[in-house]
Amino acid sequence: MNEVLTASAGQENDVAPERAARGKPLTFVKGVPVYASGRAPAYLRSKAQLGAVRRKPAAGQRPSAYVYAHWYGTRIALWDPEQAVKMRPLSALQRRQMQARRTCTDCGEVFPVPVWGMCGGCEDRAARRRADLRRRTCQDCGTVFRTPAPARSWGDGMCLACEERLERGRRVALSLVERSCRRCLVQLFPRAVWAAMSGREQAMADWHCTPCDQEIERERVEAQRRADRARWGDLGPTIAWAQKILADPDAYAVLDSETTGLSATSRIVEIAVTTVSGTVLLDTLLNPGGEPIPAEATAIHGITDAMVEGAPTFSEILPRLTEALAGRRIVIYNREYDTGRLLWELHLHHQARGTVDFTKHPRYEARRHAAARAWLEAQVWEECAMEQYAAFFGDWHDYFGSYTWQKLRGGHRALGDTEAVIRRLEEMAAYPSPFDPVEEPAAA
Image 1: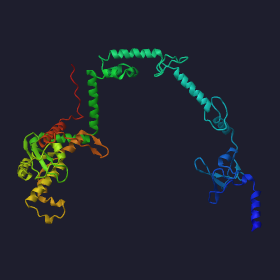
Image 2: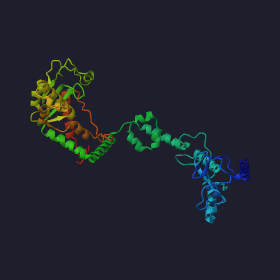
Image 3: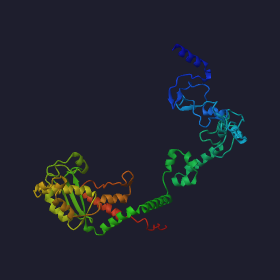
Image 4: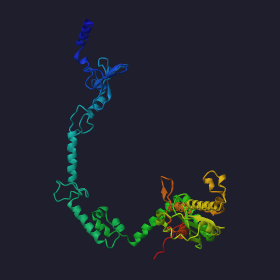
């Protein structure tokens, strides 16, 4: 055993120093050792190092080792240069191109690595020359001076003559502020003159003369007409819908209600019905059957428990409501919500009178029985006025993919909201068609 160890140690000592590894392999990849940075045998070369002496790995040659580059941890293959083959000699054109890439275009010095244009020193000198030229050049008239004069303005880079000309223009502009509007001043003077005026001076001219106002209004109207024509498929039906209703206002009724909240079991505390022509058919407070009105609801519509204490119940005004709606088409702003509250009140009405056999309706929704639904189905409901007005207003919401609902702004009382709905219908019906010719105002 001692003789074998002595023979192995002798063989390792016979290996040339440049062929001996300077550390143990970290791992093996397909039988090829992988070394840390600086631990591989010194005689091995990478492809770039072989290329520097115009050699490359032979066909079928395997890497002799791998090494990790310590600055970014990439594994690099190392090759035995004795097994590598010579590369084809460079042509004269290739040598000239390589020479050109390593030559500075300014000083002509040849570097061992490509510089792709000017070297660092020449680039610094060129940058200093450009900066010096800019300091000596007026940015307005383009005159190049011999030296940057101390009296020149370095902030805007203009010579004294240009600064004086700009100042004269500014003074003229200020003299016309009281006689010319902002639009006229911008068209009359260069933007540089306008920019030289202070914010207070510009604010003095922040108004428009009558011709400019008329031109701005014409531009606004034309832009609105282009937008209306682009979405006429949504806008046109809403205008026709409103015109149809206003053509026979007594055949349509507007209904609105105020409630104790927004839940599915909220009670109605006020209800109003009017014709589109403005005739009041029903306007009354309602007693919600002892259910208190929350403070947050009172803060919106202003109806308190004391106000509804002596008011009739929904069951008491149901005949009047049925009579007011009979034979008329009903318009509601947010139809889904108001009909939901009516369905709940009708459900409670029939439940109190024992007219429903709940044993036949195991599901909760089904307990809102056929009698309540039959009353709703007997009415003729028009399209939701809120959705129609949202399409008319045209505020598109990209996230929801629909038009944004607009506030009614009727004061949150039932009668006031019905009047606001009528105003919305009149606004929609009177909207001009974007395809009609625009009438020009008569000349004075």
